[in-house]
Image (tube, rainbow, N blue to C red; front, side):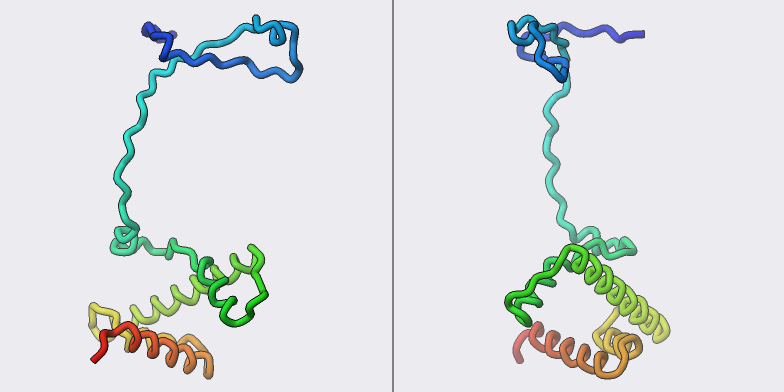
Amino acid sequence: MAEPVSEATSEDRLVVAEPTSEATSEELLGTEETTEVLATDKPKQKKPRRSRLHLRRRGHGSCAASFATYFPRVLKRVHQGLSLSRETVSVMDSFVKDIFERIAEEASRLARNTRRRTLTSDEIQTAVRLLLPGELGKYAISVGTKAILRSKPGK
C-alpha cells in the first residue's frame, strides 16, 4: 500500500530529470517529462565532536591509529630526496603496529606477573629486551631512555 503524500509547497519540491544517454527533441525543447521528489527530510543537526581520547581510555583491542604520517618525517631526516610508495607505507605501518602490540602484550604480561596494575618504563624496557634481538634492542632502549629524560620536567 502506498502511503499518503502530504501537500508540499513549491519550495519543498525538487525536480529530478530522468537520465538518458542521448539528447531527445523533448530535452532540446524543454518539454521533457520530469519526476518530482518530495524533500521532507529536515536538515541534520551537527553532533559535537568527541575527542579520540575516549577510544584510548576504553582499550579497544587494536591500535586504530596509523603511523603513516611519521614515516616521511623520519625519512626526511635520514635521506633528504627519497620518498615512499603507498605499498611501502602500508607494510611499514603494519610492521610498527605489530611490534607495538607485541611489546605492549609482553609488558602487560610482566606487570601481571609482578602483580602491578601500572605499566612503567621498566616493564616496557624489559619487554623490548626480550623481543628485539641484540644491538637492535640495546639501541631501542637507549633511544627510549633519551625520550623519557627529554619528556620529564627539568630537575
